[in-house]
Image (cartoon, rainbow, N blue to C red; front, side):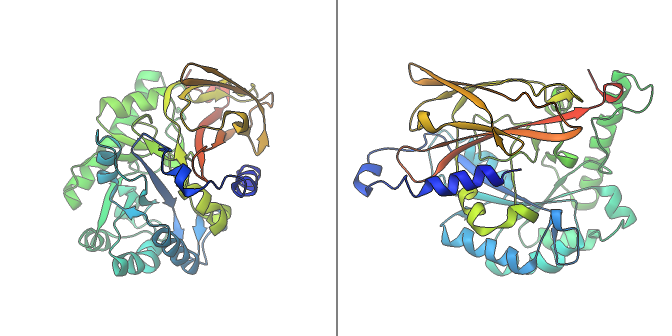
Length: 362
């Protein structure tokens, strides 16, 4: 999806270099922010779309080191972005979804050798029943001793947004609460996990699901791209997928270097749409500091879309929309803008999930 976006960003990077003395007088970002990378398989023999080879993963770790990023556990990242004292923007976390054995075999040795913390979001049912190439509880315990954080990815990786046939909304809500809390209780029982971090299966969420996670006191992560900051929705925190087509070093470098928009308003608030309808209108209000307004552009499904930008005082209002009917499944808007003071880009993404009407939670 991001090929056109990243090609545009990389080609524009060469135009953004500024003299050092000029950069030293401008702070590109007044937010504490962090980058979170998301992986699944670290293997040469698993599905290409969700895999990165062990060799490429080592290249990613080398890149992170060369770029001078501090790598923190996700629990520390949350504290970092909410710290009232501004600190280095070069903060990063490494996360894995689903708990595959290749994490232990191919990623863990490299992370342990470098002393890097990481997070694995697991489905306890898969671990208990050893579905596929799953990790086991002993391996998870071993990795915890060497910097791993284990967190909740739901009990069994269901599509949480889809209701069962004839299921009422209140019954769906009770089922989802049980799914999430049963997983958390299993993490407590087997690994003494008490923090409440959650990653949405398939990256799919809507307003009702976010509300459930908020009421249960979870910080929740999705799969839409972008840096996270104190202005990010704590029940929809972004991560950059770094597998498959997203594993290339030149594009990953752009992502790792990206900045979070300082967002004060965003819409829509419900991220679920009906199949075949037009994508909703994206509306953002962000602080204008350091953003190259003339080059701000939004994208949908790999294509530039009509983007209106206006400045009122120290704020930009951004309005973007696509006339393309929504396909079933997941899609997203991306918005990017060059920084005035640094050769990097601000990055924002809003995901949508399009369900057939009979499945919708509306």
